[in-house]
Length: 154
Image (cartoon, rainbow, N blue to C red; front, top):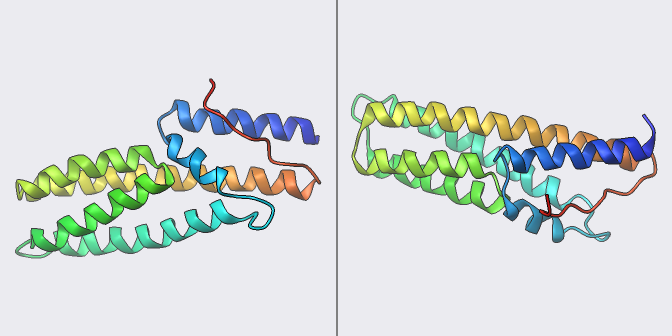
């Protein structure tokens, strides 16, 4: 695929992430922090998010599978995931965490189990979509191109 077409594909793909509500403007702000001195900044931050989220989701699964659920342990994990997803612009994960926290406050085990499944679904969606985005960017750079700047003007 020629470079100009790859750049157009990247722009279209990135636009779809915003239009589908997968990402919000916080992701663009994160991208603005990336420069020539740290060209992998966004992928590094997102990789840390993936590592932390995998651990948190595992901890949440274990906590909710206990005979007696300790909501004082569950809620901080959900709060942490909500904060980290918000910081990278993972809007749908953040929104699912908001609902999850309300079920934690109600100490509704069944509701928390449903929310955990929804959070996992949204998390794996954003993870898959961002991994694809980073692969597209890597292909452009490997072809000698620049990553086009993205704005929310669509």
